[in-house]
Length: 255
Length: 300
Image (cartoon, rainbow over all chains, first blue to last red; front, side, top):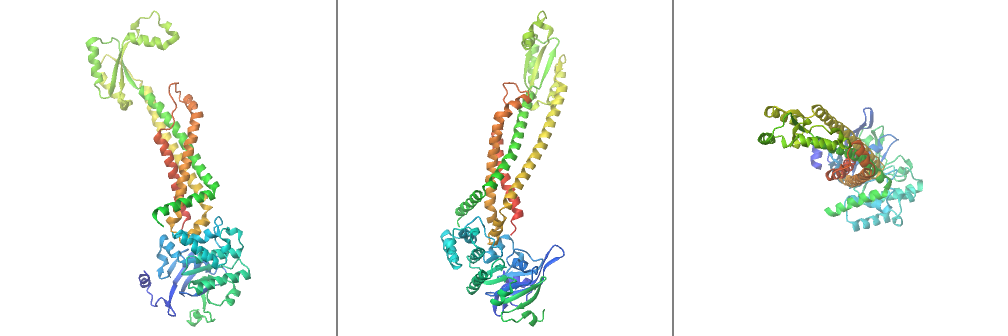
């Protein structure tokens, strides 16, 4: 599949960046809502496996839209997107579902099911995959222990603080050992101290092998945990700064 | 997950959904019940009108009156000849005497009016009954035409005017029933689909999360389809029960008066196949109502 998709795109480069395999590749991706509104405009991007990338930029720059394209939440108006070598633009519902089983997604508003317990929320992705019950219990407990919420198994999300709810959401994303962990402003609703704890969880996930893509406009957080930054402005790629502060886009003479 | 485990899982999830939002569950079931009750009541009324009209149509017959009634061998020959017509089921000869005594019976208390009149004042006749299929204007016309050739002396009576009006009434009723029934069915479908859409709308968070964690569209939809079908079945059952009670306590008497049914004729409830159809209609309404709403809400 990856070879077929790659040849059809007429790629002259290999799907690797600095010798590492790219887990996400975007080729001249545009996304419009309606006729005039262009959320993304000609975005080219490669994210190598195991990378930790911030997507930054002002509100309305297209950060959330870009993340949605990664997990098939939106289809691009133009261009191609490969995730783990598969062309997302051509996938139907069932295959998108299969793809999402390998992607963990975390939102600013947590998106937990308030009618279910913490355990049930975290178990949900595994349940959907049809895993065995004892396997689910074991895995969910491990992950909840990892995020420090093993005591809250039977509570409902509304009985928890914001930071705890976000940790449940992260546990839900981590429970499938995701290839890619995508987070849209995960600390947007949380205070500084709690945000640091949450960031620590993302760092650990990255250290364990997951590629982490995190949309944020929290400059403080980025300077505290410096990593590659992809900067969007009005739907265009305005900068691609690596963790040592060098803008690769400027180096390449694109921006 | 094995096939059976999978089935049990979906049923369990559907039942849990219903337990978690009992109000919505009752609302959806209730809507199906009310909408189908309307349809069922309409069906009861139409069904009974049909019963009455089919009884009326049994009375469609041709009577041949004779100024001078045939006798002996001629009578037998004519009777046999008429009985041989395709459309005719049986022929009954009513002599002047019989006609006179029937008339006397019908007059009841006023029978003394007939005192002193000779028996021959009423003519002898053939009462020609038709096969059920032929009890229509066309059937009667066929018999009348044949009789005109074979029994020229007879004066034929078959209620032409009444027959024409009866037939146009039947056509009108069928048309009215089909149009009204069609409207009711559409209204039912519309109301049920919208109620189900509302109940699903309150669960859109769950639908969204399911899709985000990699549930296939079918996996998301199955429990809701099962739930819809189950609620539809319950709604159909409730509609059947409420229609039965309404029929037993109100309709039976009310309709009897309206349809001028006499004591011996019962106002009937829906026949068994219509009852089963009602339950099935509820189930299908719930199922398809959910299906259409899900198609709009579950976009992966």
